[in-house]
Length: 171
Image 1 (cartoon, rainbow, N blue to C red):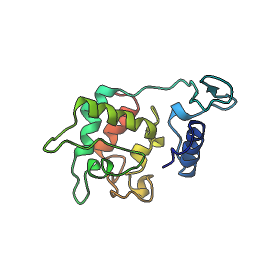
Image 2 (cartoon, rainbow, N blue to C red):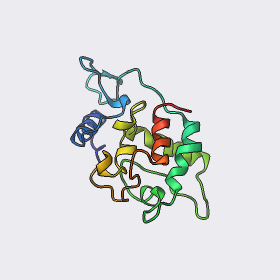
Image 3 (cartoon, rainbow, N blue to C red):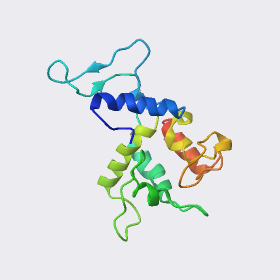
């Protein structure tokens, strides 16, 4: 994964991986030009997490749960549902597995899904968010390959627009 090694290395590795893919890292991982991250922890040389405060827009959990999360359960012709791969695989977008016979997630599972998605979304910037770019067909600006197929054939897809609106903070 891109998040191996010490805490200090995690931010650098994530930033390098995002840059290699041509994407911005979510604002909570970006360091503004000319700024120095503030290390938190006890003692000099600590490898504690670094804190960088930027004017980040937040994502709405209630909108996520009611409008975005159901998209991950939706079956598209000829393609697997997002939950099928993303609950079984170990990748950047990890969904909680559904309980046997369940058609939706519990509150606790939805919170974990919401937390997982934070690293692949740039609040206020859908065009820089891997959640939207990775499953978008390449000819529309998406990645060349997504193992689950190109879930969105254009940025006009209603589900793509729903996720983009949520990333933009629309209710």
